[in-house]
Each structure stands twice: as structure tokens, then as C-alpha cells.
Amino acid sequence: MRSIQQGMKDEGFAVPMTKLCRWFEVARRTTYYKPTRAPAKVKPELAAPIKEMIEAEPDLPPSAVPVITDKARG
Image 1 (cartoon, one colour):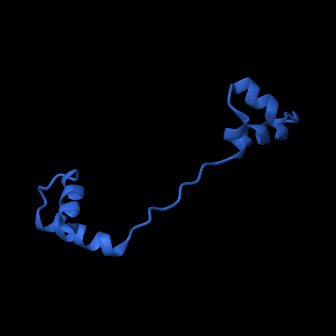
Image 2 (tube, rainbow, N blue to C red):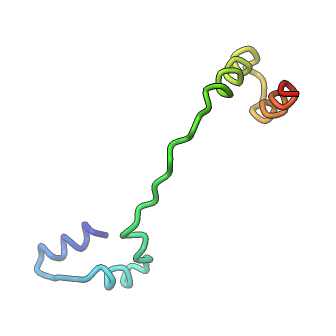
Image 3 (cartoon, one colour):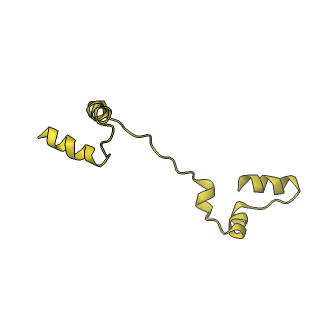
């Protein structure tokens, strides 16, 4: 959206972002705010046993890992 605004400005047309958003039917917040996602937090004390389990049994479905780890905890 900013590139469109800049292109129009270069051509001599100053168009506000609100008007551009209305023309293209885009919410203004999507042009101003970019969502950021935090990187996954991996706990090494849990990741190591799970990785060993997956490497030992590669055919193990991912859904079975929580069941097996819960049984191992007691």
C-alpha cells in the first residue's frame, strides 16, 4: 500500500493512506501494523527425550508423543 502511495506521489498525486484503504477496501490497521509472532520456546529438558523417542521410533505418529511422555512422568 505504501508503494502505491509513493508511486502516486511520484506522479504528482498526493493521496492519503485513508483514501487508498477505502479505494482498495482494506482495513487501515493492516497497512500500519504488521503482526509479529514470537519464536517457539523450546524447553531443552523436554525436547531431548522427545527427540530421542522420535529417532528411536521414526514411524511413531506425532500424536503419540504426548501420551508416551505423560505415562513416563507417572
